[in-house]
Image (cartoon, rainbow, N blue to C red; front, side):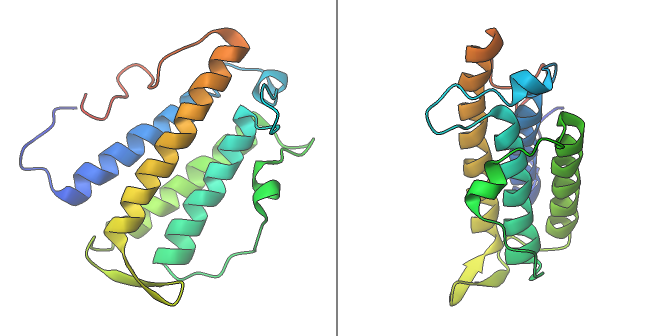
Amino acid sequence: MAVSAAESEHDLLSRYLDSYRGAIKWKVQGLTRDEATRSMVPSGTSLLGILKHMAYVEQGWFQEVIAGRVLESVSTEEEFAVADDETIDGLMAAFDGACATSREILAERRLDEMVPFRGGQLAIRDVVVHMIEETARHAGQMDILREQIDGQTGGFPPGGLPWS
């Protein structure tokens, strides 16, 4: 994709967020369920657990904070825990669905629009910038976990750089 100097801030931030979403998905692709749930760190974090967590993060920030929807409360531990009946395809679909809903919500809003947050107000721009940071941070964690599992390195899938 060619980057244009005339690109809006809204489109620029959306493009970066989508690039990091793609990196999250790429780190799980091509693995078996056993590999994707393997924990290589004392915290028990796994690639599939991070993917599941990121679906909840998308829902929390876009559906709850921006759209004002009330969703079922889930603990952080539950967000990362992969149940025996959860599959890579199922959690990938949940993440894809959450991201699609986030895109729809964001498309209807302005970045300078304020939303209620923890007794105050928060600009939607702040939510989007935070989501870029949050998604990039977890993608980086996934880089290390994936390298420990099968040696794959690289932050983005081919053609997935935000500026490509």
